[in-house]
Image (cartoon, rainbow, N blue to C red):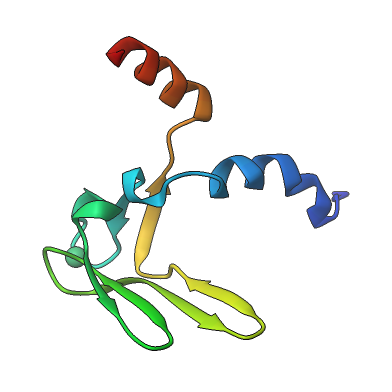
Length: 96
Ligand SMILES: [Zn+2]
C-alpha cells in the first residue's frame, strides 16, 4: 500500500490545533470520565502544565515549554473531540 508524506496533514492538523482548547472534550484513559479541558485540574510548574483528571487524578496531558519549543504529551487521554470550525460559527450565530 502506498503512502503520502506528513505534509498531507497540513489542512486537517490546522483545523485540529487552531481552536480554544478549553472547549475541547476528552476522555480519561484510566477512568473513562468525559469532560471539557476547562473542567480538569491544572497544575502550573516552571516548565509548563500538568493536566489531571477531575475524577481519578490521573495525568491527562502535559505541556512542557522549552527553549526549542512546546512539547505536548496526551497519552492520558483516550480521545479528544474538537468541534468543527463551521459548527462553532453556526452555534455562535444561533446564540446571537
Ligand atoms: Zn480519570
